[in-house]
Image 1 (spheres, protein in one colour):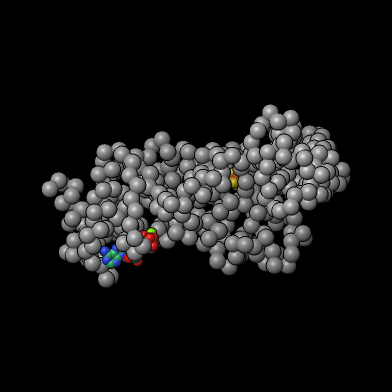
Image 2 (cartoon, rainbow, N blue to C red):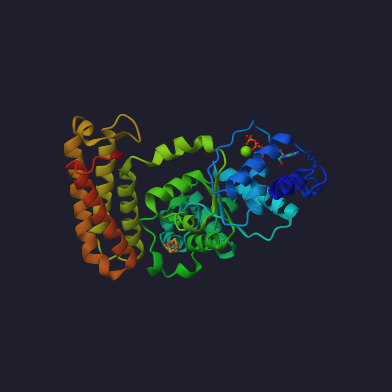
Length: 367
Ligand SMILES: Nc1ncnc2c1ncn2[C@@H]1O[C@H](COP(=O)(O)OP(=O)(O)OP(=O)(O)O)[C@@H](O)[C@H]1O
Ligand code: SF4
Ligand SMILES: [Mg+2]
């Protein structure tokens, strides 16, 4: 018997460390076989697809070899709930049982972390919140001051679906990056730093693929140093990947730009009185444009879209309103980094809208 095999046999045996620490633990042949196959694949730098019935104990079957292998491991779960569960429950349980000194970290997409910059902006814009949002924003502020992670799943007093979240988290487009006054205490940057330093990093499939597309979620910088990547619930991968590839851009980005520019008007460039009119006009043009489609989130290539009634005039109107907003932002950009950020997004979106219409970019678009 190889060392690897006897080590694993010991770990999974009825007298082993798992049996000692996991209540109700029983030695299971299938679980051990799976663990050995995974350990050998890791050692040999090979790919392995493993399938076993529900309740087999697949989690321990991959955690044990992952923790014993020594190199950097990325584990991707199907959902954020499973990610929390793995990080808070199964991973510490196996680590404590094996008594291995590995460091672990969790990484989610940036929209899961409170953003100090946009929270502050939202606070000064306070009168625009619903009453519910007004209570939430104070809870979020207290949370941001005390939390070690800024992960919104830890703040159970504010539901995930609350409308306040988009206003107090960042997007790739509106993050100020190194120019941000809060960069040093930024939760997103902190989570990425911890992930870079850790031996085992827990991510989710959605984040993994978003990162392949956008290069923004911090997974891409982890991959070069990772020895092993493990996808739990891998049968979900085709659906998750399909949602990302082949997608161009979406009208949501225009709505977000209008919203962020309006926030800047209220918080930092109040004397630019032309701005609220321009953002409202863009929002209206986008809403009217979306009405052309029979259902939300429609995705279609340019030739098909052009055949739709009123498509071209509504599209051109949207371009015009975007151009008008862009022109105003240009005059204000130098005053404030966040305004400059809006202006750059407006320019990029202008180019994208133009490219798409002239069919230079054949990608599908989501309205
Ligand atoms: N050898 C074992 N003896 C007793 N309990 C175990 C053993 N291995 C795992 N468990 C427990 O069994 C439960 C199911 O394990 P796990 O979630 O890993 O199953 P799974 O194979 O991933 O199933 P699914 O396909 O539903 O995801 C967990 O509560 C886990 O703690
Ligand atoms: S760096 Fe980006 S995410 Fe972090 S606080 Fe600043 S704007 Fe928010
Ligand atoms: Mg499972």
